[in-house]
Image (cartoon, rainbow, N blue to C red; front, side, top):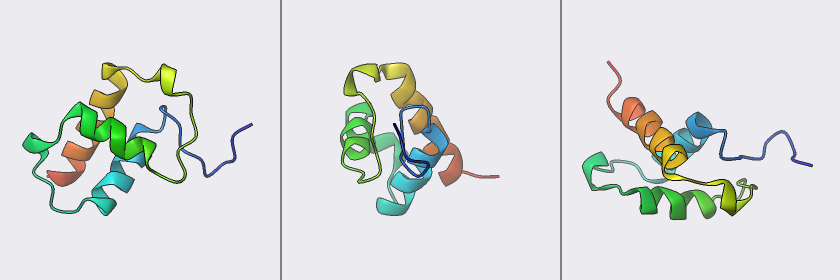
Length: 72
């Protein structure tokens, strides 16, 4: 059972905000889906099945992060 503060693949916005905080000033055009995958797995609060991940999930995290970096 997941604890309330644990992150899963469904938490794309929370993951994106955490990655933005941990990797400030990233040029988003240089961030790959593989980077997002690796960085997400390294988050201490991330607790989910690795087999559930796919490109659509990673792209959702990327887009959330991109929007946070480029807020209007």
